[in-house]
Image (cartoon, rainbow, N blue to C red):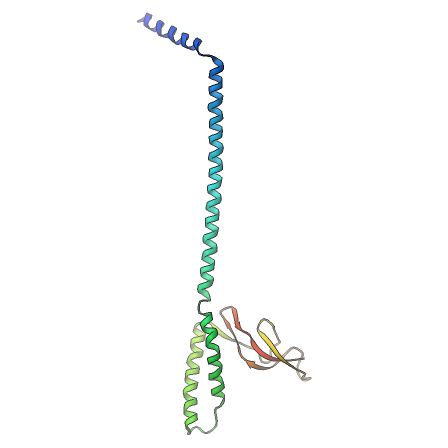
Length: 182
C-alpha cells in the first residue's frame, strides 16, 4: 500500500513538472480577464435595468397624472357649450313683469324653475359664477370690452357685467365680459 501511495505521488509530481508554469499563468490571467469582462457586463446590465425601471416608473407617473387631469376636466366641453343656454334663460327671466296672471308670467315661472335646476346641476359639477360687479378688474377672470370714466368709483373697478364668467373647478372656462372704470 505504501508503494501505491508513492507511485501516485510520483505520477502527480511528474504531471506537475510536465505542465508549463507560463501556460498555467496565462490561462489563469485569461480566466481572470474573462471574469472581469463578465462582471463589467453584469454591472452595465444592472445599471441599464435600473435606468429602464426608473423610466418606466416616471412614464407611469406622467400617464397617471395626465389621465387624472383629463378625468378632472372631462365635462368641461359640454359645460362650456351649455353656458349660452343658461345665458338665454337669464335673459328670458329678466323679461318678468308685474302682471302674474297672464300667460307670459306662467311661462316665466317655468323658466325660473328650469333655471334653478340648471344652477343646482352646475353647482354639483363645481361650476361657479365669477363675481365681477364692483370688483377690481383682473384679466385672469375678466375681459374688458368697454371703458368708462366714473369719478365716483376707483380706477380699475368693474362697472357693469355684460356676460357672466364661469369657473369649472379651478379653471376659468369663460371670463366675464365687463365694462371697467378708467
